[in-house]
Structures are given as C-alpha cells and as structure tokens.
Image (spheres, helix red, strand yellow):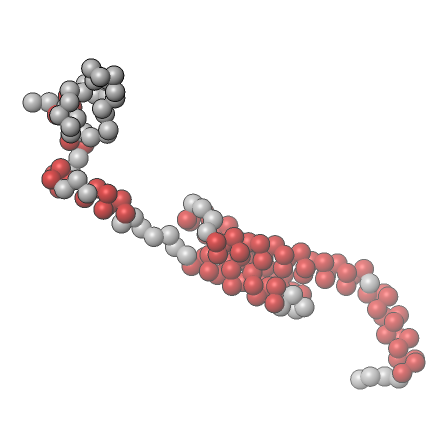
Amino acid sequence: MNYNQFDPNGQNNQNGQNNPNGQNTDNGYNPENMSLNSMYDPYNDLYRQGMQQKPNLGFSIASMVLGIFSLVCCCITYAALITSILAIVFSVVAKIKNERFDGMAIAGLVCGIIGCVLAASDIILSAVFSEYLAELEKELEATYGTYR
C-alpha cells in the first residue's frame, strides 16, 4: 500500500493533486519522510523544532553595556571613543552570530554610534579651539593670577 496516495482524512490524493471535490487535500503529510518516533507521535517533530538552540546573547549584552558606558563617560574622550567602537563591533558580531539583531544589540549599536559621534566631536573641537583656549588661559592668568 502506498501511503502517498492517501491523506490523513482518508481521501484519495495523488501527491498534492485535487480531490474530486476540487479541494487540495495535500497537507504535507508524508510518512516516508518521517522518523519512526514521529510516525507514532505526530507532535514529536514539533517538539524537536521547539527545542532549537537559543541564540548566544553574550555579544549583545557586551555591546549594550559598552554603548551605555560610552555615553556615560563621554567627557573622557578616548575612553568613550574606544568603548563606543567596541560596542559597534560587538553589535555587528552579535548580528552575525545570531543572524538577526535583538534589542540589546540594537541598543548597543545606537549608543555606540552616539558615543562615537560625541567623542569624535570632542576631539575635533579640542583641536580647532586649542589656540583659542591657550590665549584665553593666558588672559585669565594675567587678570586673576595663576590658579595652580
């Protein structure tokens, strides 16, 4: 007896062809592709699909923590720049490992980008206004004396 000719409801079905009523009765049931355990327990395959390996969240957590740290410590320019770059890298690694962005990786990516922009703007502004700050310091020393 060929099991491919019958669907579970007992209606004749030739591998997905329509039955006499005009309805397709092929619902993917094919006993030849099933294991012995799943043939006797139809929920066994569903159970195995639910028991897939959980995604690794280590890089996502590290990305989020480093991104938040880069925002909190944005006044420490080089520390913020390093931690924000690491947050962005860990977020991308988490996306590659898990094949999707989860919430923590997105938070780390966004905080890392914002921290990187703040740190880079601090470095650029320090370089641009260094002459002005040196002149201002001389003027303040002449007016109020040395503060050291």
